[in-house]
Image (cartoon, rainbow, N blue to C red):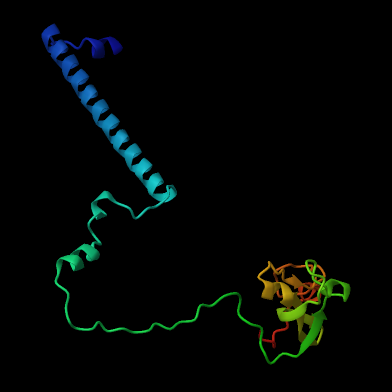
Amino acid sequence: MQAELKNPAGITSEIQTYIDGLVQNTTQQMTQQYESRIADMWEQFRLAQAKRYLPQSEKFPAQGGLFNEAELLADTPPSNDEPETGTITYTRKRGRKPINPDLPREVIEYDLSEEEKICGCCQRALHNIGIETSEQLEIIPKQVKVLRRERKKYACRYCENQGEDSKIITAAMRKQPLPGSIATAGTSSCRRPPSVSY
C-alpha cells in the first residue's frame, strides 16, 4: 500500500513533478505565513512589555510648539484692561491625621540638664525657643490615653544677635520601640477595642 501511495497508478512523472512543486510551494507559503505571524506576535509582545515595564514619559517630539502661550502673547498688542487677579488659598496637609482630641492626655516632658543649657561658643545661657511634640496612643486594658511627649528646644540669644551660627539643641527622648508610629509598646501588644474610635 505504501508503494501505491508513493507511485500511484496512472500518474505520469510530469504530473508527479507538478504535484511535488505545488506541495513545495504551498509548504513554503505556509512557512512564510507562520513566520510572519510569529514575528508579528513577538513584536506585539515586546510592545506590551515595553508599555508595562519601561519608564513612561510625556515628552514627545511633536509637543515642541504645543504650549507656546508666551510667544503668542508677545505677538498680540498689550491691552489697557487690568487683568483680574484672584488669590488662591489652600492648606497643605502634612503628616498623619491628629489623634482624637477628646482622649485624655498625659504629658511627658524632656528637658536639657543645667550643664547642657550653656552655649558651646560663648558659654552664655541658652533660652527656650520652643517645644517639639509627638503623640502616641497608649492602650491599657479598659483604658485609652494619649502620651504627649514634649522635647524642649534651646538656642543662644547672644550668638543669634551677633550673627554667629547658633545651634538649636533639642532635649533627647528615650528610644521608642516602634519609631515613627503613634503606637506604644503596650498598644502593639493588645488588640483594638471595638467601641473606641481613633
